[in-house]
Image 1: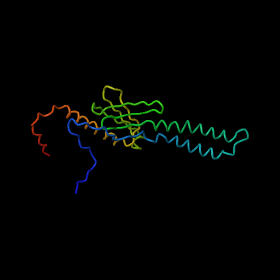
Image 2: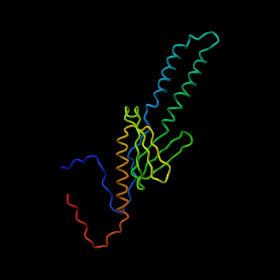
Image 3: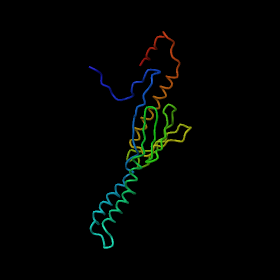
Image 4: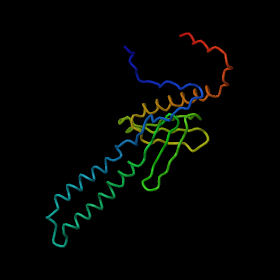
Length: 189
């Protein structure tokens, strides 16, 4: 019978062995930002259904449909695409911010260099469990992860990744043991 495996940190690779880059999390900003777009979509659908076939004499149904399509495109589809195209990814080596529909903009911040994490939450963000994380390494422009859902979980994952990467970097920077040296005994618990 084998022992159950619980969540937690993965096993660390042997010193000097290559470590694959694994995706820890991938997320977008909180979807509550699309509330007004959803409200506009419902209102346009209701108004179009009500006025279709009941328009005054100079107007025709195709004009109503064209106006509805323009409003939906500008106030529903474009905000949705802007939200959909802004993605944050946390891997075992770095944090990546990717945004843009046609021209993609990408920013990265590596865990091994270390950075400070600042959490900011407004009243509405607290009600929804969201917040804004600012990652600063002191050299580059701060990376802001705006309106992140489950802010506590993301913060914990980032702190854990920075700690693991710095431990691995320190371990790999140590000179190798001379051949024939016995391994160090484990520390007492």
